Amino acid sequence: MNNSIKICLSGLGRTGMQIAKYLIEQKQEFELVSCVCSPSSGKAGKKLGEILNCHDIDVPIYSSNDLEHCIFNTKPDVAIDFSNSTAALKNAEIFSKMKVNIVMGTTGFTKDEEEKLVSIVEKNKGAIILAPNITRGINAMMFLSNLAAKMLGGYDIEIIEMHHNKKLDSPSGTAIKLANELKKFAELSKKSIPISSVRAGGIVGNHKIMIVGENDMIEITHQSFSRNAFAEGALFAANFIFDKTGIFEMKDAMNYKQIIKDYLDEENNRKNKLVEV
Image 1 (cartoon, rainbow, N blue to C red):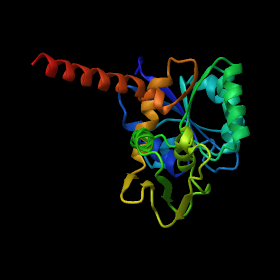
Image 2 (cartoon, rainbow, N blue to C red):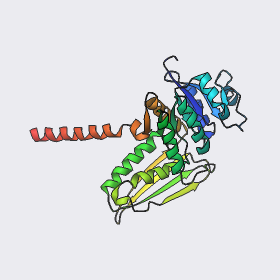
Image 3 (tube, one colour):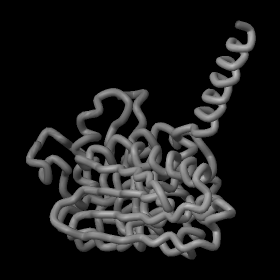
C-alpha cells in the first residue's frame, strides 16, 4: 500500500457509500484512509466497518467539524467529495489549505459558489477537478454531443434527464453542464436549450440529448446502471489530479485534445497512403 494514493471520502450518502465499498476493493492503486460526514450524522466517530457490517475495515469516520484533525491524522493525498454544495464549499477551503487535492463530484453549486470554489483553490495553489457528473461515459457523451451540434448547425436541441426520487437538485448538475457546454458554440449561444427533469423511483441516472432537424434527429443517451460508474470515474479523476496544480475538468483527465489530434493524424496518414497508391 505504500505507493497507493490515499483517499479521504467526504459525504456518506447513497453515492458516497457506494464509492466507499468500491474503494475498499481496490487493493493496489488506492487506499481509503478516512471518511467525513455531516456533524449531525450518526456515523461520525464510528469506523466504516461498523456501517458496512464488515468489522475488519478500520477506516475512521470524522465529523466535518473535525476535518483538520482528520487530515492531520490520516494524511490523505486526494479528497473525493460527494456531500452537498454548502458542506463541500466549506470543506474545500480546509482541504486546499492543507494541500489535499480535490475531486469535486458534488452538484448544486450556484455560479457564485463555483467561482468561490475556484478562487479558494487558486489562492492555496492547490488542485481541483470539477465534475458535476464524474462518470467517463457521460463525459464522452458531452464530447460527442458537442461535435454533433457543431456539425448540425440550425438543429434544435433539448435535454431530458432522469434520476431517483431522492435527488434534491433539479435539473441535474450534469444536464446544466451539458447545456452550458453546447451553448459555447456561437450559433447556440443565444438559443434556449430546454431541460426536462424526471424524479422517479430508483433511477440511478439517465441523460438524453436530442438534436432535431426538420427531417431527421440524433439522440445521444447515457444511462448509469450502477453507482459503481461514479466510483470508477471518481478514482479515474483522483489518479489524474493526484500530482497536479490548477483547475481541471473531466475533459482534461480524459485527454480530448490528444484524442482529436490522434484521429486527425490517422486520417492524414490514410489519405497520404491513398495518394501514394
